Length: 274
Ligand SMILES: O=C(O)CCC(=O)C(=O)O
Ligand SMILES: [Fe+2]
Image (cartoon, rainbow, N blue to C red; front, side):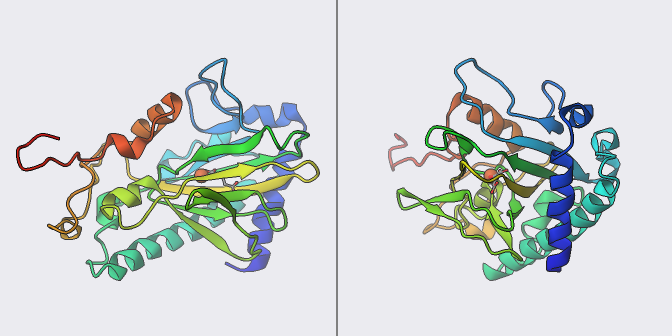
């Protein structure tokens, strides 16, 4: 993707977030829905909300697009999202193949688990300046539930951090780069070889920040699990097969538990006692 195209994606998204509140509210996320415009889903009075506005839209499969939630304003928003989504999908398809080959597996080992109706959601994150960046995060620590997430960062303003060896490490801005973030479902399929990193977004007092995250996951009824060839005596099965991991991940996030732990296979010793 050319840098002018990536700039265009950021520009059109910024134009949407700059619209008056009443205009953006036409595309509001309904209670219990994930698609549309708004803030965090509120699950408890004690919850500390993320300092961000989001617009989340499903781009694939095309017949599941909810076009009434796609902004009419700016007028080229729909065309931009279709184009960006299509190109991002090819990047994801390619990565699935390359990652399987890198483990000496058949190239469709991961993609065939996801099937040919992969769900792809694009989330536009808008982080306004925040007067108390010491107290409020743009996005709380989490791992993505996806297989692969493709992230287009702001062209200038940093904010993303990854948890590596017990500390938060900042992710630099590379203006023309797409950041590939692996999600929990890739960790499951690769039997723990590819890791889904914990990450968060910090706020800052002066500048707004925009990012565009595209998540890929299988349809909820499809079962995914560690690829057989990645399981042996030296590397026992780490995860059970799962369906609808999105729901498991969401429920755990609400409860503050780690979703991947709940699908882990517990090892037994010779006497069958854990
Ligand atoms: O804004 C970012 O850089 C990351 C956002 C993110 O982690 C997410 O939307 O899952
Ligand atoms: Fe994330």
